[in-house]
Structure formats: structure tokens, C-alpha cells
Amino acid sequence: MSVKIRLQRHGSKGRPFFHIVVADSRARRDGRFIEKLGTYNPITNPATIDLNVDSAVKWLNNGAQPTDTARAILSYKGALYKKHLQGGVAKGAFDEAEAEKRFAAWVEAKDAKVQGKVEGLATAKSDAKKAAFDAETKVNEARVAAAAQAEADAKAAEEAANAPAEETTEGEAAAESTEENTEA
Image (cartoon, rainbow, N blue to C red; front, side, top):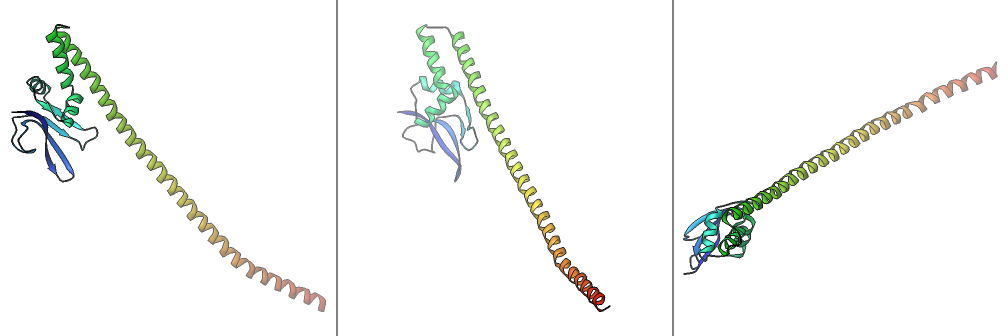
């Protein structure tokens, strides 16, 4: 019997959610499994992975073969690295305490990297939001300026329409006064 570490798909259409399981290779994808090792949610950014690393390493040492995606997840969470360190302990390269120390340092570095990505995404989101707000403010100011300009143009056009009528009246009055002066 061949044992695989693979993903079981759950979730609705277009919103996948996976369980990481150990199953007989002959079982259906979403069917019977031996043990659930964790979960994987690819929708979040970065993807949320909850994995029992010790159980995964136990199954890897017992000969379970991970699928390609499961191997990537196990590598991301450090299960393959922990198995590698246990191989070094078995060969006598270093002791168990040193292996745990190296694994803890690796996990800490990995968590810092993931936290950096989360903070970078949050910063990028806030920067994009600020840029959109600034652009909207600029458009609104341009709209207000255009409305004020249109109002000023309308007022000037109204004054211009009223001004020639006044000039003609003044011109007619001046012409009448010159006619009166010439008659006199």
C-alpha cells in the first residue's frame, strides 16, 4: 500500500480550501484518509497554512510520498528541513539539541520574512489608498475651479450683454446732446 501526503479540496466553487492529509494513494481525492495534518487556504495573501510539522515529519520518515503541491507546502513550513536535520542527527553530525536550535532559527527567520511580506502588502495597500484619495482630491479641486470659472464666465457674459445696451443709451444721449448743441 502506497501512502501519499496530499490535499483534499473543500470550500465552494471559486473559493478553494484544502486539508493536508495522509491517504492511501488508491483512495479518491476527497475520500478516505488516514490522518489530517493541517489546512491550507490559498485565498488569503499570503496563503494561510496550518500544519502539524512533527506529524508530517513522522509520516515522511515512514515513507509517505508528498504530491508536488504538498511538497511545496511542507518545504514552506519547514517539515522537509526538519527531516533533513533528523538525518544529520542519525548520522552523528550533530546532536538533537543543535538540530532543534537550527530549526528554531530557521522558523524565526521564515516568520520574519512572512511578517515582512504582510507589512509590505499593508503598506502598499495604504499607499494605494492615499494615492487614490489624492487623485480624487485633485479631480474635485479641478471640478470646483472649473465650476467657479464657468460661473465667472457666465457673469462676465451677462455684464457684457448688459454693457452694450448701456453704451448705446449713453451714445444716443451724447448724439442727442451734440444735435442740440449744433441746433443752438
